[in-house]
Image (cartoon, rainbow, N blue to C red; front, side, top):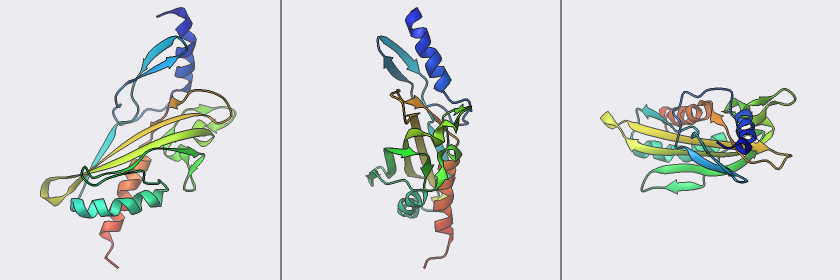
Length: 181
């Protein structure tokens, strides 16, 4: 590695999340900064949950669950049963919940959790597949990047705390357990 790329590594390391995720990493990606190129490990990959409801019922309940979380639906693929948003910008909160509740973007001694003050680009997709005994396997994939809102800086990867994905499944489950109106 050339000496000129060392400061870039230090900057990226400083922006990396200090927390660890129980989710496995997704595919690594290349980052180019000036004349330097480096390979970063992937972000959060998939979270797979099996719930005891038919796939069609789960698929129909997902739009309302995304709406309850404040995530606009930008992807709706009935053939692959994939729904969600592949990237939208947020600042500070997601439907009145501080972003730091859902994601970890590191922290600053001056401002606290970076997730609550940075410009965040969030992607959350859910894919529905049949599972054994008429149940449904829901795979959620979350990717998050963020950057300071007031500085011209590149996006850095953040990690999901798994709370948003769990909340999505909990909302779907609660909707399907309640008696029809």
